[in-house]
Image 1 (cartoon, rainbow, N blue to C red):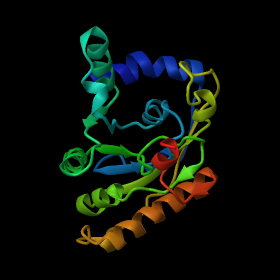
Image 2: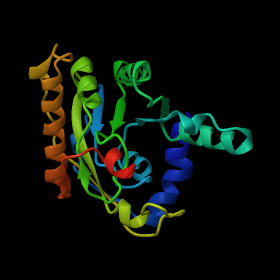
Image 3: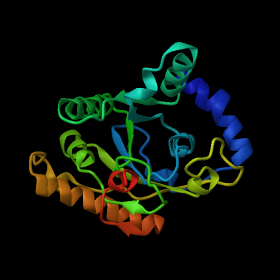
Image 4: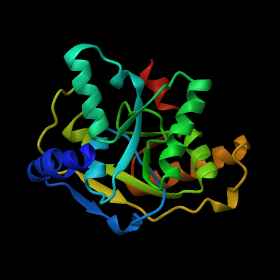
Length: 223
């Protein structure tokens, strides 16, 4: 209910009026059933504008720090993140990674739409980086439909370091569904998972036109 209020009565109308976002390929999102949306991640505002252009609620897995803040600010941030469809996950690895996978599967098992950025983190320079195979495990284990959704110019509206987004038009391009049913039952095969992930990144690169860099974005951010 809170998600619907924010999207249709509060944040959504404001963003549409001010930024006049556009979308291509919205018909590629099915009206029902589990869907995994895979996209590029070039700005912190991607997770606000992309769901705005899709009729169905879209849930994202967000780092748990957003939900554990103290005091009034922590409470406000936590409830805002929940209101816009963010779900807390622990990104420390090991058992935490398995718990994150299960959180994503629970969204899909109830027939909802899960948004994932295969790069694992925001691009440090608007280029496209190597995908992480966690998304492939979700795809194989859930059997959900996979749809690419590419953000256009969000990094220009709100580059890294900016406190507020600039007013400019922002686009979303939604591609045709990708079929990975041929890999059913092979979620334990790391070569299969890498193949699926690389195919996804190739499609994202084809639609977005971004320069591709075959290293993890996190390794570049940590330098």
